[in-house]
Image (tube, rainbow, N blue to C red; front, side, top):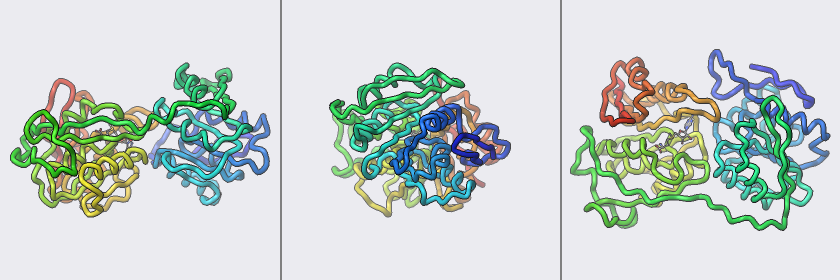
Length: 409
Ligand SMILES: C[S@@+](CC[C@H](N)C(=O)[O-])C[C@H]1O[C@@H](n2cnc3c(N)ncnc32)[C@H](O)[C@@H]1O
């Protein structure tokens, strides 16, 4: 636990998930810059309605707690970190309103603080959604590390909201100052966007190929003009979702090797993104139950939309949950876990999330259940899996990717 000392007070903050020997702080120089700027300008004014967008671990929300801010974040981890940090500072959790990035806030805001997200698409979507909640006197201050603020970032603020300037960099952080222009008529929100997914041909030693390309009923998708029995699915992605405009090549390789004919088994699409992995697993295993999990609310909603468009909303067949890895999923409950792990969490790159996902998979798999992982060849996942499960097989590999399988003994 580390202490953030600002004019607003001293706050004890930590990241979520809490890791032993954590060296990273739960705030950065951009949070400090923003809070200092507010103090210098004596903001927020009394009775102001305050909106915070993309607070990473709750530093801004905790410091501005007396103003009962609304926090919008697409990240389940950010929600959880904020709630934990409020508790740690003995502040009541109901003092702030927590919203995911798809839920519109109520009314208009006098002060809007934005942590600039890494994805420009996400920023564009968020700024477009923000417009109806601003008035001519709304103050809009955004902040980020200078390396994440580009000309294109500033252009987006100007196009979506109004005249935009930046501050000098301080400790490598920058502020963006925008004056809301109600006369501006920006383009309508481009998101969600999508693509058509051709059900890939199965190419797996684990599979039963007689079931793999089984045609599905009309409601699930159109027959494409290509190979016989090949299905085509409409894939829709909210702005923050991984590989939003086209199928990722690692995922494409994974889809070609998903097992079939698993009967009434429970399959988890872990780190589901838009859910295409679980969707093709469901096509190949019509009697299986699916659970889709991701820490991004937009990802989980995209997965829900894509699954329901393909197969209809059937709550017995599929569940959708925003969570950290497999937090909250019952132990010994899954027969197969499918995983294309992320290699970064917010701005931190590393294999620590993959490690956590593999560890939690072992807990959630039944005995004899399999974890199937796709990853870049160089990532060394086979060493981690072998150590954890005591076994690991290569299911398939190409020049770039490898698909590995580990069984819970
Ligand atoms: C490489 S993408 C894979 C998406 C999808 N399965 C595919 O193959 O197209 C990794 C996903 O992991 C999610 N993610 C990152 N950290 C996570 C965490 N701690 N718990 C659950 N999901 C996480 C990201 O939001 C992202 O959707």
